[in-house]
Length: 443
Ligand code: GDP
Ligand code: MG
Image 1: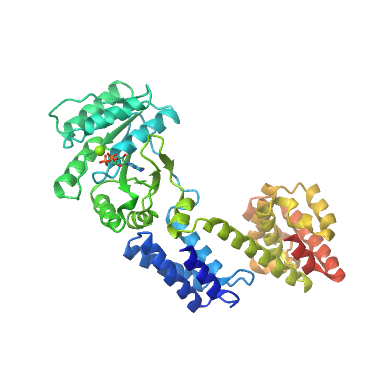
Image 2: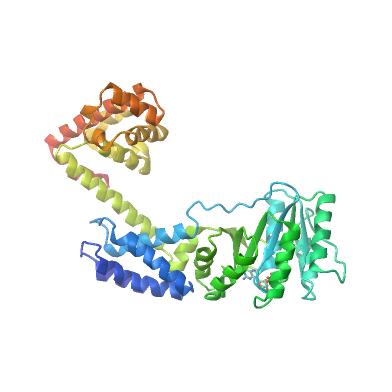
């Protein structure tokens, strides 16, 4: 794929504009890449349509190659769709005994994941964990779970095996045992089938009714590919699922099932299995998986570089406005955002030779990042007209803005004063010329 994407870059280099044609050309390749990553066909289609809408309207940034811009949009959309950068992967296990139920096809990794979760919860969260196997079909299933419990530590136990009990009865017994013995968490490991059938679904649904778990996790093999959609939607229709676990993410597959299952269920992917051993369980990481689905190892650095270039481009456009003497409050807000991105005052302003005085003024105003955010909030409470033409800000307008931003009128005045200082300073630099060069140096 990297070669293919490289090809897109070459094809699009230097054309300067993100036309619908460029976007479509890139998206045709992305489409193939997603299918190769085993994302289900209908999901690919929806995703591509969404990205096309997002991309074609997008403002073109001169210093970024159109292909890079498309990749960034695709990558961002993937991360979003997988749950976002700060996806919540925590488990709801507050009221003891909290019940976690594992569901999924046979061989998907339920029992292994049960062991991994037990280890994690007992070690990281200091919970006492009881494991119960409700798999009465596979002869060795219960022993398998007991062995996993032994491999953990003294805070993890398996429910003793009683021959001949039905899954529902084992579930009741496990609930009682967890309550009586004061366990924090009970994990119910259910039986699976190789294919979904009504009897299996009835069984897990009955267990869910009995146990009313606070977490019902669908465990799925990341290598299932196109079947992922079918599996996810069938389980989702019958069980009160709360999250997904994708196993075998250590395998060769590119993990397209993650996208498919997310798209079909809308459920958070909480964990991914990355090995057969008990410590092979990671919190789900949308960025990592998005990079992998795109199949380009260094996609992230590529994207970040593109984002930097976008910032640089914005700085240049700013310089253009400054040359024309048009530094309004919107520009100042943008400066504040840039400063926050570029590491506060040490960033842009600090790199401009002529800006030392203004920098000192801002420093004396204690302009740390929190303050920058507040200043930005003040500017956002203004109308567009006010931002463009600060001169119209009379006392009553200032009062309204202060109320809107939840600050005092003095703070609003401070922002306006700072704007005057900055605009004045910019004007001076303009007359000396070379602002553009300075901005370039700042990159
Ligand atoms: P179950 O039938 O759903 O309970 O599946 P099991 O937990 O018994 O797992 C089936 C097989 O998959 C076992 O050989 C596991 O060792 C293996 N397995 C489970 N999770 C992972 C994983 O994240 N990575 C790898 N490589 N193997 C796994
Ligand atoms: Mg099992």
